[in-house]
Image 1 (cartoon, rainbow, N blue to C red):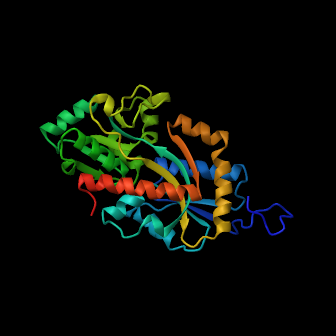
Image 2 (cartoon, rainbow, N blue to C red; image 1 turned 180 degrees about the vertical axis):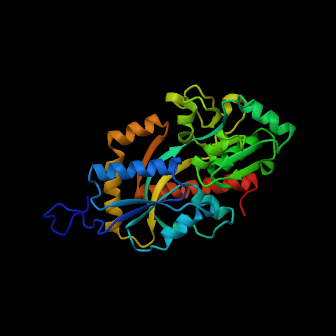
Image 3 (cartoon, helix red, strand yellow; image 1 turned 90 degrees about the vertical axis):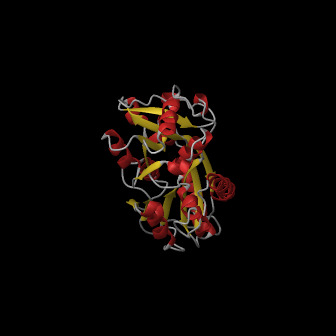
Length: 314
């Protein structure tokens, strides 16, 4: 922990001096919202942050509104943005000119896998059925997802290309978050939902949806242990890494990042955090700010290469 000069009181060199806003780029009810509110609860209940923590949903613009909102708070450590690889893909698609380097990396929390799901009554039973339907008519199925060109889109596009089809012909329907996508799927308005696995586990366990396949190198454990990967079903693709992380605005000092390093590291070591990730089939992969910065550079290069290969990058 960074100490005040002299270290007499053992207190951090900086602590929040007013309410902290946790900014979410998607609507309430989705997995981004659930994870952020879990972090909020643990930080408050364990008094790792004593200032008030307020969750603010800034959905819209393919998740660009939240990034713009956070970026405008330069030098202020009281704004923390929960973000995902859409931060990369929006820039690579030409949707925005804002780059991930215009934010301060604070911590990597976890990595998610992408699932393709349908209503329980759907005639599609697995990836082979989905591929067969698309080969008959590339626009016969509608795919719900939170953004065009984001990780869910890249994952299903890579799978379709691996099956010998043109991913640019997919019928994509964009929603503000996985909560809205699920409502549309269950209501019969779309055919397939493309999302993080954590967004569909509950409805799968309730018997309302069927997970066709998961973009992962190997099968997951827990409640999704029986769900095959794309590769298990003859589609040679593992998808794109869907990290979830916290960023601050530019201009944060070493004392600011040190505070968040300490608070979020302690949060990630709590049993309630670990238990929730296990129950939600999420993979913990915590990195502090310095290591997370290096991780981002590597993932950006990999995402850019995938998007160029699929013909998506501008």
